[in-house]
Image 1: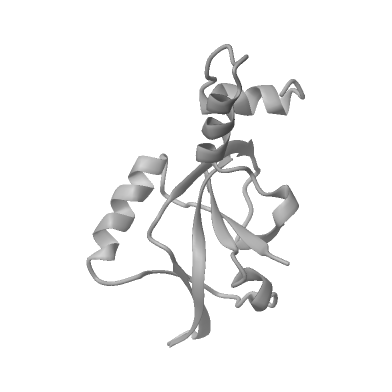
Image 2 (image 1 turned 30 degrees about the horizontal axis):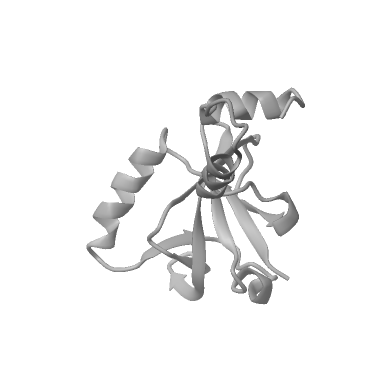
Length: 144
């Protein structure tokens, strides 16, 4: 069974800023996000799991976790989350700040925006598209 991670994207205020920052890092090789703790549920994470990024108080985007690397520096052992370069935008889901990462069960993970758009295009009775912010607010109010 797949499990995901969720983490605050510190210092980033938009998906475009994250995309730009990571594009510069890709020049040096794969994207590796360093964290102090290695996930105990490694097998579940590597079975299709993603790192969901919290930007401005909402889960907004995810990246598939490709592998976990064992890293050692002057502070001791750490874990490198090697991430796929593709940033997949998700529906906005309000999420409060926390330190480090947390597990996110697959059933609780936000849907990919591209899947929602495809569903809306398939729905003949659709009255128009909502902005991600409006959809998040309506979900928070229990109206969507």
